[in-house]
Length: 320
Image (cartoon, rainbow, N blue to C red; front, side, top):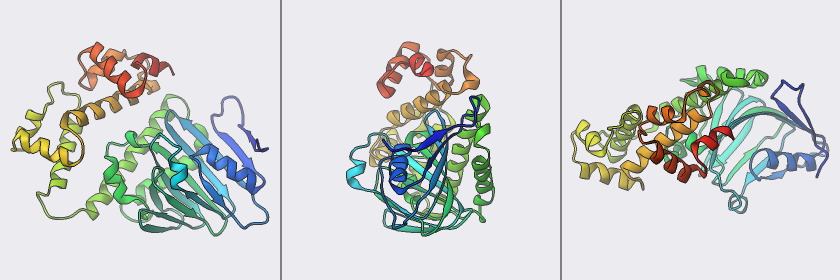
């Protein structure tokens, strides 16, 4: 174990700080704090600092360090189970992100996303500071295969929705200490929703403009499902009728995306329930009420389904 100095600024301060005074310490620190990484540097002297806040499954980390390079290799990926996206906001200095055959050069204010389950390279030629959000795949309303179209794509902080979302994320970096309690939890997940909105905007810009394509139809079906998750009568027949198609056509569209209509509805409902169960603002709401809010009217069925998906019953998950 290396002598990495860690600590916080008081018992009520949820921000954890870790400082590495050598590159060997830093190499261990970043792999422990994110996912296992190969880290490289030619610097004779090295210093880096992480300030982090963990809220449920979401990690928010401010990184300040001398220039270096990190690589996520296939061998390291094979040792990981949980699927995460990482979102970088460049705060100072410049960085290069490479993934999926794309390369993004990032300057202060720019945002970029990458997937920890596929190889990537991050390189910083000089001292830098950035904010990293590590977010599970299933925390986003958007499907992972859609977000995959945006990996290593520069989203400018001075254009489009970036002009609003980049300053908001800068404020997250500057105020990690206030992201505590029920309001901090809700604010952090609001940030995830804002990021998803930005992703959807970017996807709209890049999307094939030809109307009626199977991909466009799938997007519309998923949007309809998302808007009606709380309706216990939501069904393939109703979704198909709302879009003037046969249920056979609907099932075919989802089959091409390697899923089913029922499976997609169940997954999205479970994710909504999971988030509500960990929301401190909803602590006094019964598990059954949360389940019913998202279309699960049979409490026993919900408990079995939740346990199958997350490995424990909803009441135990809430207490964890």
